[in-house]
Image (cartoon, rainbow, N blue to C red):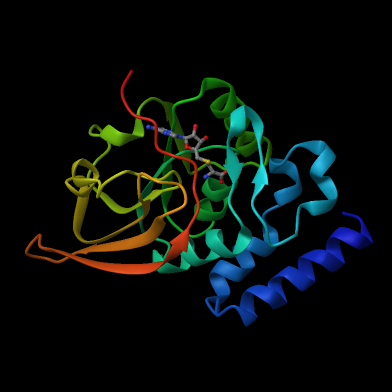
Length: 212
Ligand code: SAH
């Protein structure tokens, strides 16, 4: 990696710490994941800017702070089976793969999934399984999951997905039908299956497109 990118990566990690990300496992997963591989080549120099960037098909790769924050909120110990809705570039899946037992990721756009699968294979990630489909219905054959993460915004709380969460599990999702009025929500399922919810922060994600 170029000196320029290395310096920018070091600066990004400092910024994330300054923004309150103090989970060292999350920071080291961000450090070892080559974000430059997941973005369009012309944007190479911006790989370690703390901003979201466009990827193919009008989708986006989230801001590193948001990836770090969502990952930290999942409180991973290394033992979990995690499902991600919205594979996109595969960047978030790659970060998760370093922190949990297995990542399942669902994407509705085939070209994005093909490219993400290729990249994760090239990076020798062996605890990643993906499928093409509508993530709104989850992955019933692989459920229940310890953790669920949506990287596209659901219009309303995703009850179908919460049904696929184990007791004690955590679901993190941007919620809001209007892109200018979304919040990142955290849902924790208690042992008796009741759901506690917490509003984390305002966010801006591409929408979850379901059905049709
Ligand atoms: N996690 C990605 C960011 C993805 S952007 C990354 O790290 O790069 C959100 C993605 O969600 C887009 O690729 C979009 O196609 C996908 N998406 C939207 N609705 C979906 C649905 N119903 N099921 C699966 N994927 C969906």
